[in-house]
Structure formats: structure tokens, C-alpha cells
Amino acid sequence: MDPDLNAAARWVDDWQSSIEDRAARAKALSERVAGLRASARSRDGLVAVTVDSTGAVADLQLDERVRDRPAADTAHAILTVMRAAQAELAPLVRQAATEELGTNDPTTEAIVTSYTRRFSTAPGSESD
Image (cartoon, rainbow, N blue to C red):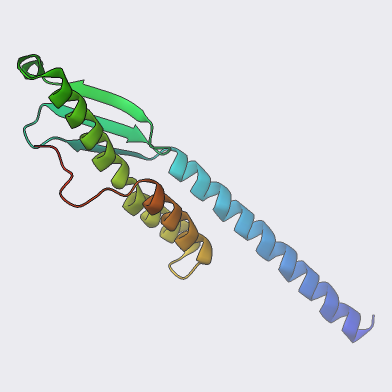
């Protein structure tokens, strides 16, 4: 067989193997991220929220003492704590992506940037 054809065949094989490896790592990352959850609690302990990997509320816990507060205060606390929980997703996604794809992978940065933009929270926005 022609040496150039052998080299080309090896290159195609290596390229295909690289694509398959990348696809397997992307699938593993997708499964890990899908299972992520993040939680936050208000400073006074009255509100706790857990969000899933999409940022949707997966669990909401209210202390009985919320009955003694105005409804508007409780609603504000829920939204504030939810946003704090969502903000915790980006570091979790970064860890998962780094472990699956590596630190210098552009996909890692793109995914983390997406989570950071979607779920950033203003400093000091934690519930009282």
C-alpha cells in the first residue's frame, strides 16, 4: 500500500477517534449537568430554595414563622434566595465541565459563561 495512503488512513482513523472521544465526553458532561442542583437559604433561615440545572425551582421550604411576615416580604425573600441558588450553578457547571473537558477547552468557557450570564446575581442581593 502507498505510504501516503497509509498516512491518510491513520489521519482519518485518529480524527474519527478524536470525534468519538469528544462526543463521549460531551455526553458525560450533559448527563452530569442535568443532575446538578444548587441550594440557598435566607440569612434568617425562613426561606430555602433548591434549583435544578435549568434554574427551575426544584424545592421550596418555608419556615412557619413566615406567617408572621407580610406576604410581600416573603415573596421578595423567595425570589432573592432563588436567584442566589441559581448563581451557585455556574461554579458547579465549571467544575463538571473542567473535569469532563479540561480547563483550556473553549466549550468549558462557553458553557460557564452561559450559566453566569443567565443566573448572575447582584452583589448584596441576599435575603435579610
